[in-house]
Amino acid sequence: MSAKIIDGKAFAAGLKGRVSEETARLKREHGLVPGLATVLVGTDPASEVYVRNKNKTAEAVGFKSVSHHLPETASEAEVLEMVRALNADRGVHGILVQMPLPKQVREAAVLDTLDPAKDVDALTPTNAGLLLSGRAKLVSCTPMGVMMLLKEYVGDIAGMDALVIGRSLLFGKPAAQLLLAANATVTMAHSKTRDLPAVARRADILVAAIGRPEYVKGDWVKPGATVIDVGINRVDTPDGKYKIVGDVAYDEVAKVAGAITPVPGGVGAMTIVCLMRNTLIAACEQTGVAIPAI
Ligand code: NAP
Image (cartoon, rainbow, N blue to C red; front, side):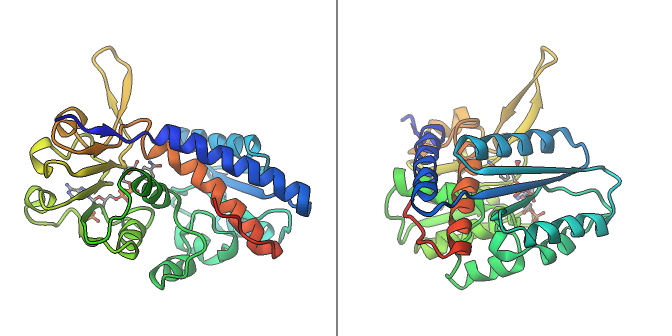
């Protein structure tokens, strides 16, 4: 058996097209241009690439894109002052503060200052709580992307056993909430889970967000299961270069699974486009315009 490949790249391209069309319509019919502001603190090379891609995609879909770059030595007070200014800026509907932050800036202080209505990464306690209550408007981007792919490739997941490996605020916790809201029977695993391979073998849907290259092996997977690989890991290659691999040992798992997301080209492709979707929703919410179904 060879798994069906879940093409996140193609799905993300379609979603990006729909966001662009809706952005053009909002401008035409309501004079509304969604605005996304990014805040980067320091010079982490991976964060610089992420932020650049977010700004580029925002411009490509027709948003106003604003980028702020503070030095590595910026104080917490300076970062909070910037967040407050963006909270007050009516032309900015979404604010993304790129994590991780330098150690002198507390992530919790930033999230407690960020206006939840503009929290397009959905990391503030308010948005996390709304998700728990089933009332979220803004949902964390990568979990949202995963749910869209499951809907497209699996359909109704009610009653299925879903396992999420990893319990981060950014991915694992919101992903588990969304799977539960879709009526899956959800198990969360983490570094203290006993006999993870046995737990994994029960899953109809196995979601791995661990941050360890090719950790999930072929004999952990129930035949025919859907495997969603959220991991993005850089590993060195013998020629002195590097490649990006997921948290799943793709070649062996693809022989057992029914469907699988590749890395790259799976979940990762969805995240930035889901951020654009959130910014569009935030812009509509803040201006009293009906939220389009996209
Ligand atoms: P994180 O905050 O580092 O969390 C990792 C989670 O994995 C933790 O809950 C940890 O358990 C668990 N874990 C670590 N080792 C484990 C083990 N041996 N067995 C079982 N669980 C283990 O990571 P994250 O931010 O969620 O990211 C996870 C991965 O997804 C990374 O590769 C990241 O690059 C990727 N990612 C991709 C996207 C995307 O756009 N595609 C977005 C976000 C993240 P404990 O809680 O017990 O420590």
